[in-house]
Image 1 (spheres, rainbow, N blue to C red):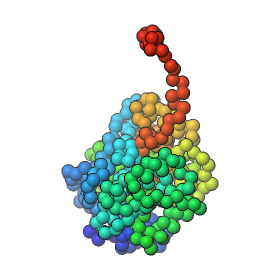
Image 2: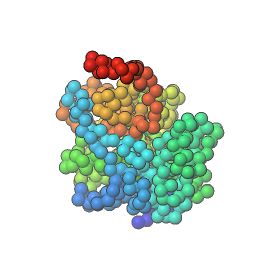
Image 3: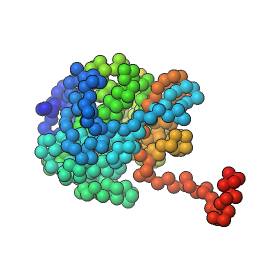
Image 4: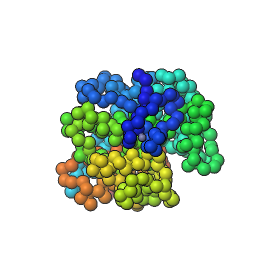
Length: 397
Ligand SMILES: *Cc1c(COP(=O)(O)O)cnc(C)c1O
Ligand SMILES: [Zn+2]
């Protein structure tokens, strides 16, 4: 299939010659891979693992290997997280992906198309989940991989990325400029940079929403809450909702809510202000480091998706995020990444404001696993007991 890109806003189309370098339309909006969802229904899914089940809506086929482990994550009904107001909570557990986050969905598609088109090197700009994921999928496919990380990356995270054998470069200087710079240099040097909202990454990441909607078919959930940073996942989730609606596979899109950390919430601020553009912010520190993009390249996509589906973009404080992370673990047994806990914190806030109603089905997208993060402090109160006293201690439990 000849790959074509289309502007999500003005509809202009552009050919895509891999490595797809320029993802921006003349109007300034992002380009999506052009797909034709007409004719798709839930019987059009194929008997293939993970994301490849939706081959009819995807621009590449599985290269096998770890790509077959991407997606197909459980959607878990979790009554213990229900709101007293009667909101029914479901958790989409993206931590079950091979590198522990939804990024595997996009990496799988990006690497698959790179292989199909003879690209030998993929790359990414990330110091977290996207770097681990891109490096893992490249390793599985036998492609070279370049990962650009900031100079001050924590050693634990660097180790997880480096184990897959990519070329990791610590870049000194303005890391914020690398998103654009990498695309320019990648085009010159033949490296397909699969950055946060690259069109192929968006195609893969739309499968989160395809899976959610299929699980509820022929109905759809009332609301889906997604932690958002660059807006790449939001873009995919929204694209999926639009494709399913266009195909008639859902009657209406679920309300899309996006969650940000208050210390770095450019999209939530634009939503609150009723603005049409997302302006960069001076970000503060937050515990939700995976979603701290102060100048989100696809921020406007998330803004528009929230508005058009009747949802919202909300900011939650670090205190609320940490409480939600504890609640995920203590009430429901999920070890989610701190950034992912924003989804539950946002659900609590939205329910208290009457935005989520009784008897509504709400899906929290737990975007990543918490097992890569230390839980310093959580065990500080642990008591010590002598073996000889253990019987007595258990008796007075
Ligand atoms: C990347 C990431 C996000 C944010 O996704 P964007 O596509 O950048 O908006 C949220 N949660 C986790 C765990 C992530 O790794
Ligand atoms: Zn356009």
